[in-house]
Amino acid sequence: MWPEEFSSLLDGAEEVTLTSPARTREDGSHSEAIRRQALKVRLAQADFERIWPLAEARYRLQGQYAGKAITLIVNNPHYSQWHPADGGEVDSVSDSGRSYSTRHFIVHFLLDDVRETADA
Image (tube, rainbow, N blue to C red; front, side, top):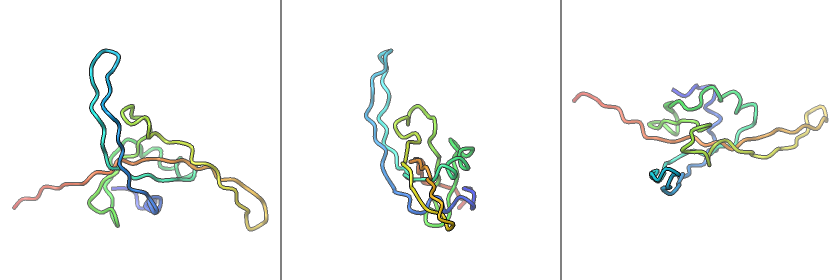
């Protein structure tokens, strides 16, 4: 299960379709085309660093995505164009009046249906 403490990080996630055409490799073999559903999320750097240890593992979701599972893409070569990318900085002012910047990343989670078998 996706840790409850991180469930708010998926609020505002955008459902997207990852597509990449089949390619011919240097050795002459062919890769298959990629077409996968995913969630695209913009996270503060601190939040991204907190979920990094969960990367490349599949987690079931609850709430609005109940019945789905996600996998954070970080270094899988098949999905290299969707690896974490710069999401810009947001400048803010603290309650004390001091200016600060928060760096963000754009990340993608593969989104799959979770199918459970049940005895009839």
